[in-house]
Amino acid sequence: MTRPVGDRGAVHTTDATRTGHPTARAWWAVAAAAVVLALLTWAVTAGWTPLLRTDRALSEALYAGDGRGRPVEWALQVATAPGSAAVRAVVLLPVLAWLAMRAAWRTAAWVLLAGALVGPLTTLLKETIGRLRPQFAEGGARLESLSFPSGHASGIATLVTVVLVLAWPLLAPSARRVWLAAGVVLAVLVGLTRMWLGVHYLSDVLGGWALGTGWVLLTALAFGALPGGRAALR
Image (tube, rainbow, N blue to C red; front, side, top):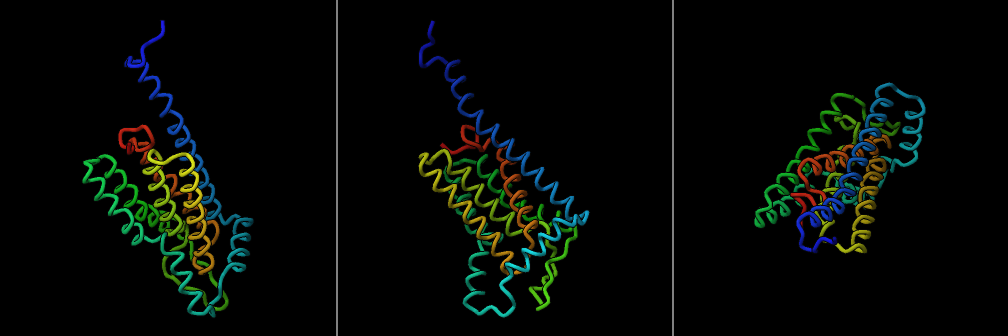
């Protein structure tokens, strides 16, 4: 006997089918990010020669040099800014206000936690690992802060992933592809600027991306912020 459309059990089955796939994919993504971050952390702390050699070669090849002009410096600083905590706050604070007006407190709590704690997590890893910034014969940036993982890379990965998770249920399939592509391009651009500026190695950037993406998806799973979850927008 076929159940009617309005049968509660049938609705429950449909919801489970619809929401199970994003959750499974998110867990796989979190696991992959954790593995990447763990392997990079081991390679950096152990001084694994192939990684260090690749990092140094790419760093020297991409560094824009100390003699870059003001227009180039200005362009690099503008392009790298989306990974900063200040830009993250400028974007997410209005989102938090909008969620509060909708009384979406669970969603707001997730956005606040994901956006605010990625900075301290990155700093904790930096202090634990203790990797120095790239050094160049011409001088380089000579920043006193540590290098692995990149805070700008983890920051932009966090921002992009939060926005995509929030907007995903509201977007048409074609729009989702556009937003995803734009987010990936922005994250890659910020990562490249960290190497153009001479303040990070490639492995720093990769570690930052893994940390930011994995952190946001892990908290999204905990709060039910993925599509179909309790904290997902509808």
